[in-house]
Image 1 (cartoon, rainbow, N blue to C red):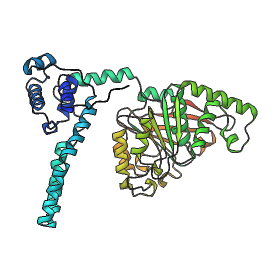
Image 2: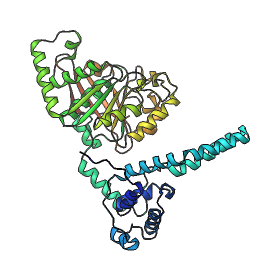
Image 3: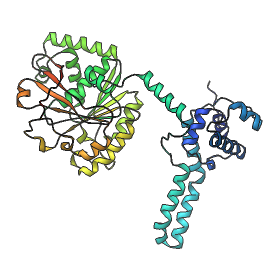
Image 4: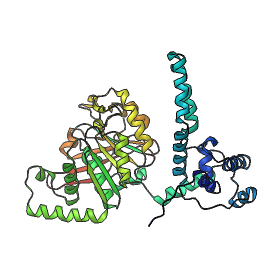
Length: 413
């Protein structure tokens, strides 16, 4: 039977003060010592922070043990988890104090609440607000460790084509696939991305906000099997097709994991979709399409003013630091009858996209390219890499396949 015990948060913090990585975390989060109840632990905390400030390195466990006559144990928690517990304890112990300040102001004069409320909020935020990531003086070892971890992880998830993966070193951050209607964006930015990553052993999720989840799922299976998707739509699968789909599904099952999911309205914010995918262990998420995402107020982006794109896209930018995110989106009506790849500014809500995107890829085809079953996949905006374009061959009539033709050749103008 597992022993149940009450974790002593201050004693646990004391253990972390002997761990260099934990001390760096506490330093960069600018932990307020009011979060510490035990005066003795608070004294050790202040001393260790002063040592780090003066010498640019935390004192070792043996130095702490000698300085304060301590018998230090190994931490039982992750430092981030302990930080959360300390914040929660502070709120339990002091929330009433902050509320009373507001209440007293109201009793004196209701109009004073407007003045007192922001001040109380700032005081509370100063105690329990998280500072976010910080790097700077004295952080070389910490920075190079993050680099080494990145190298060990290797390239990010696949964009669906080896040549594109090689150019951008795989998927990182927030990626947009942007195209006019009926230019295969859900196929190339969605189904093909999922297939190639599953075959590479990764777990990808696709939020199928436009199509039913089962149709997106069958696109993935048809693409893997090479079975024309129109046969599924028309109820015309032959016995050979069914067998090919079964074999392809076994390959997918043996290679990696994927999930096609269509959350109900009211559960389509970027925060909830990414959090749920992360809880299930996904390596990345594709959301098809952006216009069906919901704001925090429950409004679909497709019905929003372009200025309202900022909140969900800024949230996506922050969330993509921890899990690559692909957002499938559309150009606005100005691209009708365009004779070349549209520009970034022609995407709906383009200002927010340009600000938040790690990478924006466009899909486009003129009439001649459509007749030849070819589309261009090209860079619209990139935070880290040079712009490049490729031609992709489309075969959806006799099989189900997307083939890299090569780098797109454009006449200089």
